[in-house]
Length: 510
Image 1 (cartoon, rainbow, N blue to C red):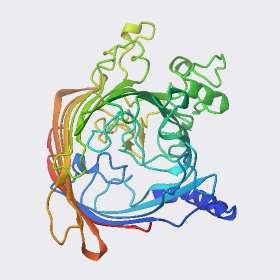
Image 2: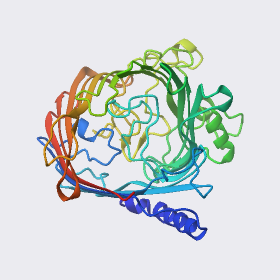
Image 3: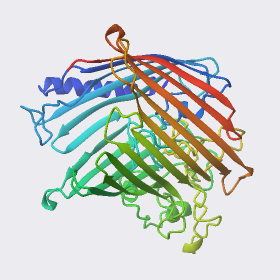
Image 4: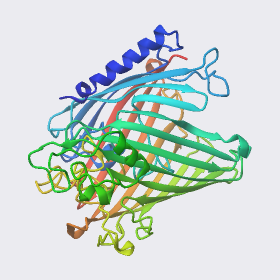
């Protein structure tokens, strides 16, 4: 079944919400932005190179060649709303967006659907609060948003998960601190696939981040965390459940277990019909996330941003035995949108420790072997529609039957990555250009060790590079020409060179 078909209920619900708002005379406006794009992916091998498909919200297939068409419409919040976030003349500000992707492939994998719906949402804002329902592109974590390898736990690598979310979407000063402390956060309930090893899984997600320092201070500090939980559902084959799941194939669900999921507390119960030993000693659901810290320093003509994401999965971080793991980044940004070199980024990602090669539950110093993104109950792993939700450098294993989806999700979660990115504008001029050409360069080297349970016989070394430009052409009222080239060289992926070429039209009606 196509992704668009599976999300039919979501589309209908969104239309009903919009119609209801109209009937109640709420200020829903016509779309004020339209986007259409046509392009093609080509590769020297059957695989699309890593940096052409990674962190693209699951819309770029693993296989090439691909012809793609994308179209979307959006209604953004009214820019004339009052300072408290409300829309002039109304208590609420309402927006929505829909985006559709049609991919045409000759040799795509079975799960790479031809029609995708990566965005379909309604959002409502009042004051500092926002509520949204549907699918929307998001990233979580204190990291660079453009040149990064991607936040550890939620990078934008997979298609957005349908959910309902309430939150404070931008850093908002806390009054009694006179604005020195600002807060940003979310709380969400989502629905994962009806298919997979565990069917009808649910997502619990929350995040909380604080900023210390005024927006114009010389130095600002950030700290916070995000918490992701996959829970509920039942085994696809109820007649052959694994030993970590109850004999009826159902995983704990319901309001009582939702409390355990949200609070991270262990269930206090002797009810063996609902819980087994795995549930009682490993919490309800698959919990993971990161605890982040960052600093931003104003250097007048430049801004320096330094960040660290600490990984937690099953308690190792609490005892600091996997403290070596995490995402480390530093970005220098020139405070000039048209600078030839505006951003320079360096990152180092390490996931090789995992608290060590042993897991002994009663010994805090040996509670390792975290096996990031794998789970003994939720064998579909930390993924949505076969794409890693977190960092794309922990990829799904798509090989023999002892790998995903029959065994563990990934066969490679012990990696370290050295990454650099550069972005800016090229000072070219001419009648054909409406504004400067922008560019991005990404260069990544990874050292891949497999997993503790099944290590690679020899480390797999991989280089992945990318260079792309966006040229704003003046023809036909304004078009964007996108051109990208990427290369993979190493022993993890097929050696290949690939390209992406597209023409995009954006119409703003404001």
